[in-house]
Image 1: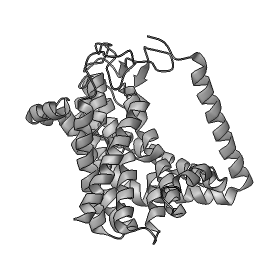
Image 2 (image 1 turned 120 degrees about the vertical axis):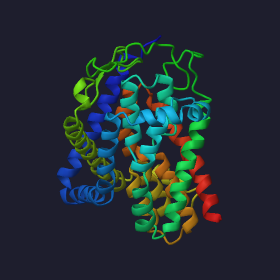
Image 3 (image 1 turned 180 degrees about the horizontal axis):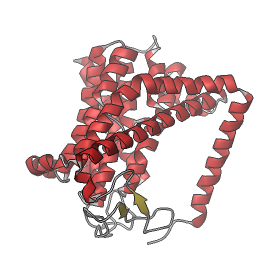
Image 4 (image 1 turned 60 degrees about the horizontal axis):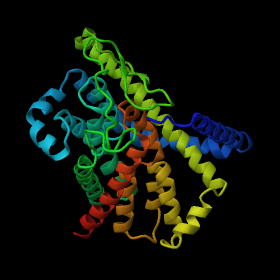
Length: 371
């Protein structure tokens, strides 16, 4: 298999260094503006995200370490295998993702894959429907909070979850077990073996097949988890779940805060202007276009902008909000992808599945709002 050009990773690093340097300089020359943006991001995280996410992060970690997925594996194995071509444990991942929200589903895919519960192709299939938002965020923050309409929140969540299942059914037919084309992974498995996955008691490292920065023997560590017998100690399970959940949730908060800064910098320096002119050919409302652009970066900020608009009808605002939640935004992708990458799911595949999820969710939400 051909390796990626060596200078590709270097180019990305240079671009990242330039962006980070530019953001740092902007904060130096206009500190009040960007500190306010960071405060807004932290406020959204503390008020809207943290109370909904932290408890479910803890619940998910405890249940996973207690092997609660075994119940789903036994009872739902046949229907899940037939519909989505994944083991019954994927039903457990979907259920916790639908209850908890981003990035719990992605995290569980990575953990189950690392323990040998999913093959690489199965992890790709699971990623198509097991990465969702949760009801507390959608019904509370978005429906009752931003849109001031519990019915809109219900329509969004119903369309979002149903679209995820439809999306999973579709991509289950696209992701093959055997090599069909000379590609690394994703839509078609590259034929590499899963024999190097760890089993219980073998340590906390896993070798994931695939090309990661030119290294086909990429090694990753499962954060704050091992596969030794101490996993079955109740006190260790609880303390590990608390520690892991706090670290994961604070990471989410950091991403939200940083992407609020990115949005502020992009808006202040008219980075979105070319896209706004292009989108203006289809949607004349500039404020709505800006809300969509913000949502593609950080979903909470984007929906907050859309909710302020009086010129856009509630059905359209609700459907656009559902689409943005289903896509997740760049912030959610950055929160989820480290787990999915460790499971061997490529970034382009994540974008493809979430883009399809976005379109399906928008259409379903529009229909639900019309009923």
